[in-house]
Length: 146
Image (cartoon, one colour):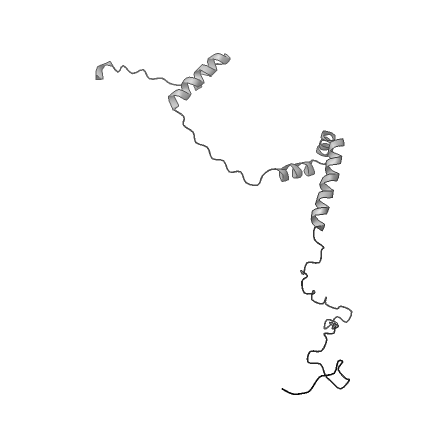
């Protein structure tokens, strides 16, 4: 160990080990003298230029304004667009529909039961099938096969 005690403040002839970082001028982009690239973001900042929540606030404001108009205009606005600008009306209607529909259905239908129910419905409604569309019925005598 030495008896050397450093001074409180360094003198002018002392070079610091780690010079203080100076903000550097990024300089012009080659070929574009007036264009300067953005310096990289500071530590702890994200690279996204928009402050947090701007899009959410804009969306909320738009929805609120839309709701206000909807409450006052409602069906009249839809009718006005349908009459004055049918392509826009159809485009908006199509955008509101789901893009994919996943239907799962199982049918357990007996043909005889369906035909019987159909005949009963026709009789109840008082409708008759045209003669060319009447079902052919084959009567079978099943008494000989026992």
